[in-house]
Structure formats: C-alpha cells, structure tokens
Image (cartoon, rainbow, N blue to C red; front, top):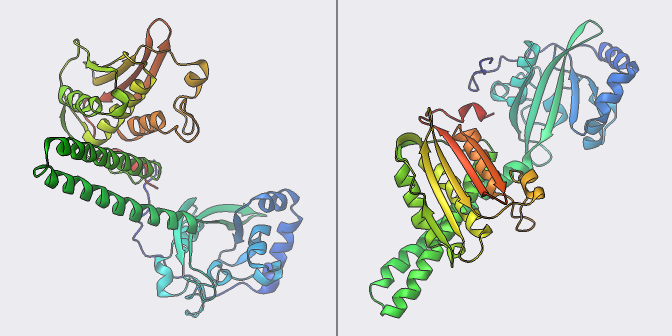
Length: 389
C-alpha cells in the first residue's frame, strides 16, 4: 500500500503565469469534439473540471455550469477557487493557488498531487465572498489527452454532511448528559424514600441507564460508519465479559418470561480486545435472541477457545425464515419492521472492521439459530486506523 501524504505538509504556491485564453479555447474545442469524453464528463452528477498545468479550467461539465449559471466561455481560464468565489482567490499575484492561505487548502493539495501523477482525494473548506461557505470533498486524477497532461478535478459538496455530523455530536453530548443527570438524581433520592418509592425510583434509574446505553450504541454505530471510531484494546476475561452481558440483559424488558443462561461448557480465557465494542456486539446478539424467543424460551451464551482465537456464540431455539437468512446482516433489513435493521448490521461492522474478527450464523428447525463471533486473541492498538480516509 502506498504511503499516504502528510496531511500537514504545505502545498507549494502555484505559478503566477497562465496560459492564454486563445490556447485554452483551443484545448476546450479539442475536448468538446471528443464525443466519448464529452458525454462521459457531462453525464456525471458531480462538478468536474479539467485543469491544465497552470491549474486553469480548460473544460467544465454541465453540473458546474448549472451550479453557477454560467457559460463555458465564462469559466475557461479560471482556477477552481476563482469559480467558487473564494475570499482568498484574488489576494495573490497569480490568483487561486498563489496565496499563503492556499498552502493549507485541500483543493490545492489534491491538484498538486494529481500533477505529480498520484490520484488522490482531500477535504476542502471554502469561505466565499458572496454565498455560504462550502465544505467539499475533492478528487484529483491525472489524465493524458491528445498527448498532453491534465488533471480531472471532481467536487462533491459535503456541507450538509458536515453540518449533520456537527449536530449529531452536539445532540449526543447533550442528551447523554441529561440522561446521566437523571441517573445521578435517582440514586441520590433513593436513600430518602419509602420501600415502594425506592422500587419505583429504581425503575427510573434502570430506564435512564438503558437510555444511555442505547444512545451510546447509536453514537458508536455512527462513528463506525464514518470511520472515526477509536479502538481501545485491553486485557479481558471471556468469563467476565459473558457474566457482565448476562447481568445487564437479565434485567432488560425483552428477558421477561424467558431465560438467559451461560453454557456449562463455556471456557474462560484471557485475550485482548475492546471491551466496550465487544459488549455492544454480544449485547445486540443476546437482545435479538431474546426478542426472537417465545415465552419460556431459553437463550444460551457460550465462550470457547480456538487455536488462535476466542469464539462467542448466542443461541435460541427459533428458526429464521429464508428471507431473514438472506438479508440478516444488511443495514436496513429487520424482521421487526422498517427502521429496525441496525442490530446485526452493527455486529458485523464492529466485529469485522474494528475488532478484526468474523461474524456468522446458522439457523435450522432442528438446531435453532446460533450467531457466532470469532475474535483474535490479541487486537492491535492501531486496529481500524487504516479505515480512516
């Protein structure tokens, strides 16, 4: 795998010189007559520019022209920041790419890397003179056209994505603090209440703790999907992990009228993994198994040693339908209705991309349903880092 460039490295300033408008028009005419290139670029929904060695636009697709309501001749010869009305684009002698601010610009970095022959992507923030600031994901790809080297520069507006991520962080922070306050207050109040009121306050306390757990589960899932989830390996005991999961879910509403037991053949062994993520994985499997069980049903959790791994299984006596077996790990599928399909999806995501293990299942009328999670005996501290863009 190629080493990633240093994200903090300064981008060399762009040369001030520009190609003449006549030369650029000539290149644009040549590209326009290439029917395949023209149709391909204009069929893309994202903004695409073809840049020459001076970072000037020699061709732009319909998406860019529609975004700014301009004609092709109005954008030819401009640099990307000049098209987007960047506040720094006119500060240097050579325009976009020639100011000290441009040395830290993701767009400039992507173009420079492409001019060096490396396809790459970056994120870029643009403060505009007239218009809202923009968060962009940009791609620079080197290409050869008619024997000349150019850069295909593609842009995707991710402002909404960034805004949503910021709101999610604020939301999770505030709601966890609120739920935590309920837990704390209920614990303080229990000492001064009657037995019956203590029982009711205990229920409030448990509900608030469950709420926090569900919030943290959603926060972990979003971080995992966004490749920002941190992995924290620690020395663990398999028996202790299983015991903790059972203790929590025995008190859960889904366990009412059902049994949750540890298989007598379970083995205890030491291994290194992320406790919080593993607890989330096993908790999801246990909860799903309890929900799938009828009153009086038994859910069994087991841990066992393998040659170079530790395996956890969760079993219930029910059989999954053919439809469920074919879609069980998909993000939006659930046997419990629309919008409920994150449990098993998150299991595979966390196990295979962050805990470096394997998630699988079997289901039949004779043997019931068993979900199995196999994990390495030692999870490395840098697991998951290569997933980050």
